[in-house]
Length: 277
Image (tube, rainbow, N blue to C red):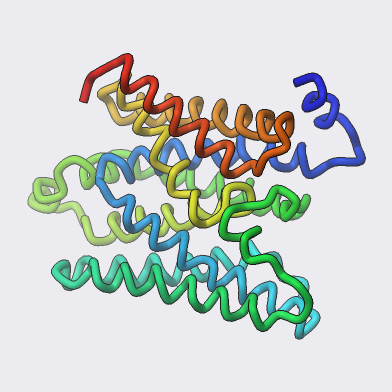
């Protein structure tokens, strides 16, 4: 562990600090939005959006290499994730019977397009870095983008907390009370899209859904109120991301995989100790 602490203050390896800061920042949004995702049971939508974001990542990498652009892959991921979120929201509200088909299609096609872009990028580009995460991908500019997105998501959750609470627990009742549930449901899916992009660089698009759902699931063991679940999820996420980064550095393991395994193990242990559903 002393080696990890030494690396944090070593100016020669700034990516360790970037990964730690990114994990702590993203945990705030993951805890808040993830709690809503778990309560509303739309984790499959978050999964589809995260996988579809590979199309934007791949396109950004391709354009940077072939056109000389200087576009952060995170920007490409955000644009694709937002597009997927709007499509899914509109289809889900307009024709719920076919929404599963559309979600599955967006999930698969997004990944397919992203892999095609990466395959056609000149030179060697490892798609696993984006699929399973790579802290070396994080740049200083990405931290600024993550900070802005994090602030936007958190302010939205705080400002529209009552509306999100209503559609998460009883959407039909909220609709009868005159709440524009369609708008808030779409907005929640958009916030979910922005949130999943925050941790793509460190844990990858495949495993980002785990960090969105496991901390709230762990918090749900101890809390019953939504706001308490959100706050505890934030703290749990920060601990898991920091511990996963430290453990992966000490054991020389992939950061994303280590963090997810640690989170899953912690959840199973807590679930075994506190047998409460």
